[in-house]
Length: 411
Image (cartoon, rainbow, N blue to C red):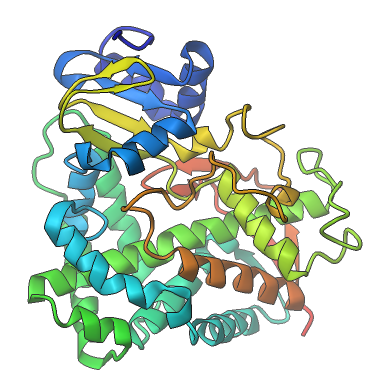
């Protein structure tokens, strides 16, 4: 066996570059060194895995050898405790089996009406003509939908603000190689406010999911509720804002957005079919996957594609990188929803992860997101502002400058 190629030096030496431009740096490393890139040595060995077969190896075929005892999981654990988004082993399996039936498509019969009602209420607030930031609006909308669908109640508009404070600190800790120390006061206050919000939900909420969660211990119940609030709105909100931005760039003839999708539309002004909407959401998640990187720790020595993966070393799998692999995606930087119309599943497409730890809410998200997009575009004309829409690689893949638009409500 052999050592994977890489730029040499320790991980710490690469941190300034990775922090300054994590997405560009990952792509550059893979372009220069190939699908497996080694950074560092010894206790700080890291491998960047850039081929779908590597993701399959780590996340599905040999998932028992790759756990979540990682810096990123530890940082999120500070927020959610031991939960589905941080756990491994028997406790994770018990909680997953408890919740999984409630996220199957057949169990989500009431979701469509919740999504449409909440989206229409948001649009009514935009009437008749308003400048809005779709990144902000989608966070508010998806938090409303998540709380109603998961717990049968509303919690107000404060969830996104609190989660932003919490996740800012979590990201700082996940990307730091130094001691963490005590969290700042605003983080502790935000965590306390989220716990209070959970108590309000418990006092007035009523849903099949909440009934199932009440069978857990009090700490397990609260941890999973916080994890659901976090995962249930943050990722979908980002995907929605990207979808609107990319559709409008393409529709208005932005040079980066081609206009050759006759199979999906009758003309450039009317892209309202459910086929186009679903494909556009999928393509937006290809270009800008909300979960842009996945971290795992090798429990025992392993070999991937002939290269040694030492025990206790870290591997990173980036859907952002996989979704631009030229062996699987022709012209990968192009927004092209037709990739997802009646075609076979692409093995290099992992917006929801893979294997036993794949996202619990896949069916939920793929009902919610297309419905939001279609409802908004049926009632509104959206005009993008002049602000450059670019990604910020954070805990999730957010928008660096938001998505400012002018919305004209037609009906």
